Length: 310
Image 1 (cartoon, rainbow, N blue to C red):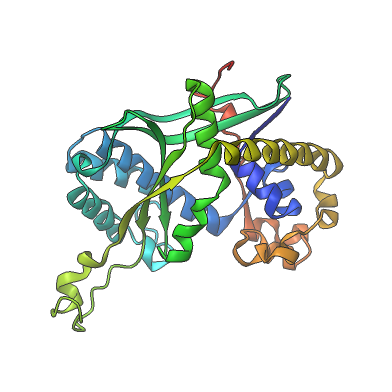
Image 2: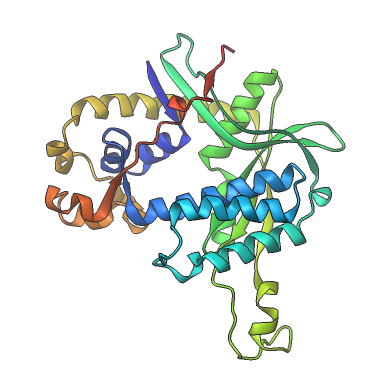
């Protein structure tokens, strides 16, 4: 039996050596892990917000989760991850995005569920959905995924038009309900250093120290998936899961890592790869602790995860 999720599929498609490094040996790039863990702190705060909790409780939960990533007294490498900067962004979101303004009510919060993607139960696809929304007018169900990024550009927003993660969520909910699910959302939060200089803002006409929080950017993006797109996603997902099965058996020793295919060198995947510095050094074990940390990604092993037969 092969357990997999969208993260694993995406990594296999990007670069086989990255997929093996992360999903066979359980390693993560140190910088990538910090950004992801702070993103998880925002997820925790957002869940409370959409549950209708008060800002005080939301901020307290966010700070609690943040402190697990960067303990009090330590400073992050990136200025945008400064604790007070992050707290201000979280609180600005709560103040400016009341749940009543969203086009959906929340049907369910974060769940980890899996079901067979094939007909025999060999390949088990798992999803870890942030929220499932229910349209206030039509009652249509839609996955809602929270995303944090350092720069919410048009390019960043466009990449979700066909991205596998949303397709997988739509496919899974559709499989659960027996209905086509073709609408999905990205709830985007831009995590940047809030401007606080004495320089005059051209937009607001006052120093940035007075209007800095007005420059915090949040957006709700809406995307669609057709039945044909979801069927094609299923076919491609099974193919990639099969490829991972093959490569996980072929490269099951760290000594073999330098020989795994480096697709990223051919598709520009190296640009944002969390392992690129170690890869440049040929995966020399001397540098392993410098660039990586052991942090296996196996959501299907979390206690709350449950497999359902559909």
